[in-house]
Image 1 (cartoon, rainbow, N blue to C red):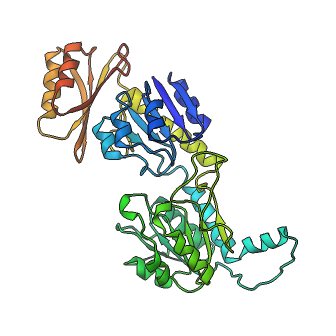
Image 2 (image 1 turned 90 degrees about the horizontal axis):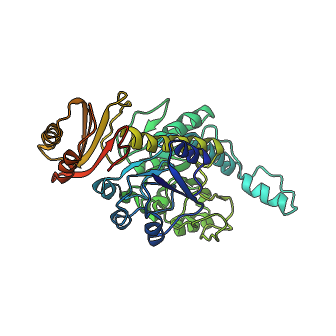
Image 3 (image 1 turned 30 degrees about the vertical axis):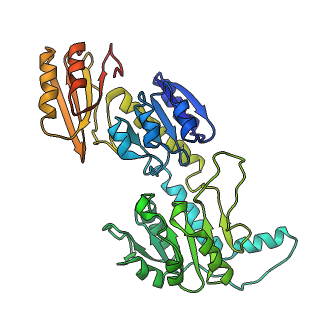
Amino acid sequence: MKALLLENIHPLGTELLEKTGIEVVTHKGALDEDELIEALAGVDILGIRSKTQVTSRVLERSERLLAVGAFGIGTNQVELRAAANHGVAVFNAPFSNTRSVVELTLAEIIALTRRLTERDKSLHAGVWDKSAAGSHEVRGRTLGIVGYGNIGTQLSVLAEAVGMRVVFYDSAEKLALGNARRMSSLDELLDVADVVTLHVDGRPGNAGMFGPTQFARMKEGSIFLNLSRGFLVDYSHLRHQILSGRVVGAAVDVFPVEPKKQGDSFDSELRDLPNVILTPHVGGSTEEAQEDIGLFVAGKLRDYLEVGATALSVNVPSLILDRPREGAHRIAHLHRNVPGVLAGVNQALSSGGVNIESQALGTWGEIGYVVTDIGGPLPEHALEQLQAMEATIRVRALGPDQHWRQ
C-alpha cells in the first residue's frame, strides 16, 4: 500500500500510516490537476489540506485510489459524489481545529476593536500614537455569527464569557447556546451586529454570499471577519467599505486564490489598508490542532484500510466496526443503493461455500455499504461474482492472507 500526503501534513499522521505498513510519500505544496494525476499512479491513499483539488477527472484516472483524507474541516476541495461513485471514501477532521479557529477569531475581534494593528504599526514606524480615539471594549458589543456549526457555537460561548452579546444566523435549525439569540435572516443579523464573522461551509451555494448588498446592510462603524472560505466574499467591495469608513476594521484568513506553497508571492486588494488583519489561511494552524488533525484523519484512513470502518466519512455510509475475530475474513462491498444488492452479496458468498458470521449494512442516498465477516477465506470465484454484480462499485477482501485485496 502507498500513500501520498501533500501540503505539509503533520509528521504524526505520516508516522501513524507508516506503522500500519503503508509506504508514505510526502510533498510540501499542493498539486494541480495534471500533476496530481501523475503523482497518484500506484497510490492507494491521498492526504490533502485545503488547496489541492480532487476533481472527477483525477478520480477517473486514479483507479487504485481507495480513500482521500482531507486534513482539516473543509471538504469542498473534493468532488464527494464522484469520489463515492468511484469507490473512494473521504474523511476529514470536523472537530480537531475548532478551538484554534475560535481563539484566532476572538483575538482578532479584540485587536480590531481596540485598533491594535494601527498602534503597532505606528510604534514600528517610530511614532508614539497614544490615543483612545476609535478604541472600544468588546464588552457590551453585539457579535453576529453567520454559521452556527462547531466553530460558531464554540465562539458563541467564549464571546459571551468576555461580555459580548451574541446573535447568530444559520440556514439549518440550530440550538442556541447560553444567551445567544437566533436571527430569522442574515439581514436581521446585519441590522444589529457590531461585529460580523463568517463561519459557514464551502458548499457551492454559499459562493458570493457576502457582497455589496450585505455590506450596505451592516451598521456604520462595524467590523467584519472571514475565517471560512475566500469565495464567499466580494473583497473589492470590502476594500471600498473600509476606505469609506463604513467598515472600521476587518480580518481575513482566506482568499479566493491562494498560493500553492510556502514562500510563494501573494497579492490582494486588501493589502495596506488601515486596521485590517491579513493571515495566510492559518485559522487552524496551531501545533496542537495540526497534531490532532494528523492523528485523527490518519487514524480514519488506517481504520478504513484495515477493518473497513467508515465512521464520520463525508461521502459513504458510516459504519462503526470492530476488528473481526482472529481467523475471520471480512468482505467490504461498496455499491449503488438499489433493491436486491444484499441478497446478491449473500448469494455470491453462499455459492463460495463460506459461512456468514456477521453483517452490517448502511445506506446513504445513492450509495450502500455492506460489510460481511465470514468464517474462512473468500474463494476467487465468489469474489469475481461480487465484482460482476451490476450495482457493485468496489469490493475489498480483508483478512489474514488477503489483506486489502480489491
